[in-house]
Amino acid sequence: MIIFENKRCPRCNFKMPKEIMTCPKCRLNYSKFEQATNIEGKRALKQREYDRVVYRSGCPSDIARWKLLLLTIFFGFIGMHNYYVGRTKRGVFFTIFFIVGIVNAIITGILRIEPSGELWEIFTFLVLIWGIVIFLWIIDIFKVALNKFKIPVSLPR
Image 1 (cartoon, rainbow, N blue to C red):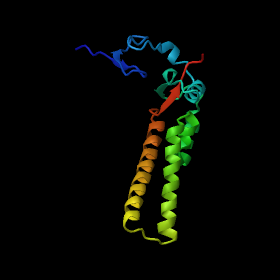
Image 2: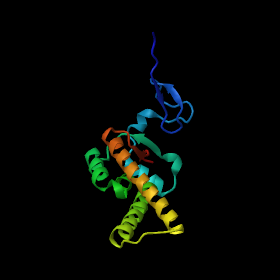
Image 3: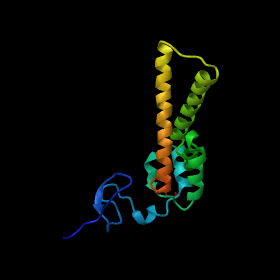
Image 4: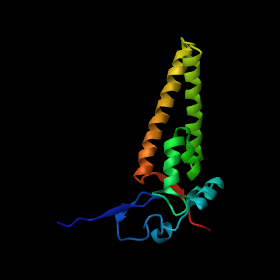
């Protein structure tokens, strides 16, 4: 029985044999892809050059995996690990909804204000979003630990 090993292109998700070193669909060169850095990925994202950015699993040479793991475990609930690798939009999402969750906890826990009517619906929605963020944080801890967290990288110009 012959087993064919395949891989997927990180840019266009094209499925191809593992031996091919250049994607036939988008022309991504895998030998250069291994040299891609997160610093260039952050720079390309800031300049809105999204076609230069590829998200790869595993840490490139300029990202310390242990540092990323510690940031994810201890400060991941506010999105610090996303800021560290340059995924700013996702980091802002984490930060905003963490603050919303804390404000909700203060209002209902410390001030003992029970929302009613339309406020209750808004409160329930915000708590649900906060729960989703906490769930995503826990998933990110496992992804970083298992080296499956997607990090934006790009080749230097």
